[in-house]
Length: 336
Image 1 (spheres, rainbow, N blue to C red):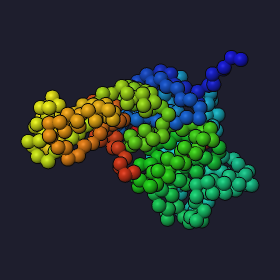
Image 2 (image 1 turned 180 degrees about the vertical axis):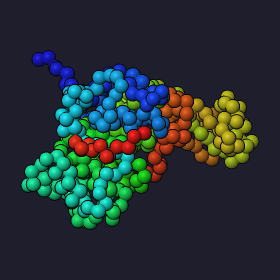
Image 3 (image 1 turned 90 degrees about the horizontal axis):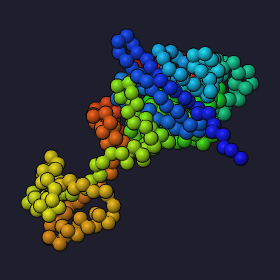
């Protein structure tokens, strides 16, 4: 039997968009597999939100072919809207309505019957653990609760594709990880997630594939592991009790003695493997040079970001702390 490839959840070819003389998206091609998490990374102003707005039918592209769930976003926007949910950077709930009332309002906007709307509302309140606050006004919700309710509102219509535009910005580490689990649960049910984020750790933890957007172009795409393998830079940082020991170690290991700004730390290139690390320490031990401590560093998405954009992620895309559309959703996305 011949395997027939399934149509991608999102298919984009030759996408272009400008604002006046400023080119925001310059010939974008990408495909997102059904039931996967695709993450779009890039500096502030790179065009991530513009991409979400086009894919969710909120604005039109200047050129290119864009299909979501097999529907053209220009010729068949209503079918696209019926198949998607959007959660933007800023919560869209009404602060004067209770959580339950916000969900019922979204059910009405989706033209669900009264009984079906109440059923879906009750189901989402339970799924997102909002029972204790469901009858409280939105103004009383914490940041994490607001984001959970906002996402629940986007799920009222049982979307096949959900656009999450920086969904965890401003959340504390625990709330962020709670949101990650919600996203994983959605994908396990067959939902496709298109995620934009400023947190590299978030993309690394969640995404099946990642694309880096810079100056309107996709400059790299692949799985997190594939992207990391493209970047050299694995090393070991050795800490010594004094500068004399560091200088001696630099001579033994044949590395620059001032490889870091810290006068007690020496950076030695390496793959981080147990064998190579043991050999390195044995050489120092044979020469009676004592190491106070060490840190292993393998290339991460921050290194990838720097390699392909020429700027550290910390400048525009902060890493997360180590401790750690609806059919009518136009108001949920803020242009950037």
